[in-house]
Length: 377
Image (cartoon, rainbow, N blue to C red; front, side, top):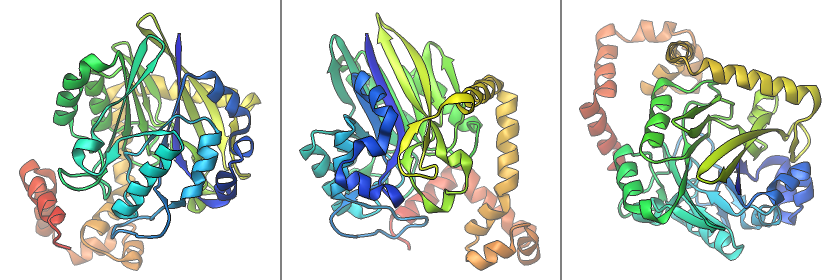
């Protein structure tokens, strides 16, 4: 019997920083350490580079980076593998990513999902645990962190490459775990595309697909004998802007038990940075209610119509913000346009139809991506 524990986003920021740098695993993970130590393999997603100096790249959104010494807490906790395929791992460019991989290697912690080139980033990490060979593959949606043939970064979500990659490495592993960093933040159900993607990853060889990044619990399902978790929340991430958001502080550890070619999944509810530093088990009635609600949500997302409805509702709530970003509004103008009145005043319908076409059509979108990646900005 082999046990694999997977934690969500791990980012040494905020009030947790001193605990990471001092290596205080007891304060960082408290009662969770017993779960870590029972597992044969412990995996988490490192949501920021470990850096010696700041070398931020041009991007939108927050730029994260933690001191190299933060590895002390990660090593003391007994985490074996860190996924690096996420939207922040290249926040400090190649110097930050290169230092991260070197620091982890010196600490005896394996990394997966990023590298100096796409060829390195796409490699499947294989760990032999007794008689079981466990493969770990990490991928991220296309933001500012993605590797290319001759440039560093994270392994991109590319379904064609995924199929070829798994097929070429099929003889090297018995059980494949895919860490997928993507999906909309704070959506408590998978989008139709994300659900379809996760199903396809299973159909093409994954035994478990764990979605990270949404900072919310998106439900789970067993599909064709494989486990899918549509968002598990953060393992430990004290992001100041979300300190008053209760849902941000709730998450699960995913525990996979593999025996005789079959696997089972247990979800361990936790709270993190809520408000005290560190992560710990959720207990009592709160834990019972949390698991009941998560089970109900998981039953609901089996219905494709429910998933589509939740996605349409989310998009309706966010449409003016998205359109403001698309047409280049600054922060004040975006605020003024939160109900869409400004856009209707300034932009004729025909202009928005043109924007729709270049975004939605695959060929036009590919052209735009190529233009932007070529350095038009």
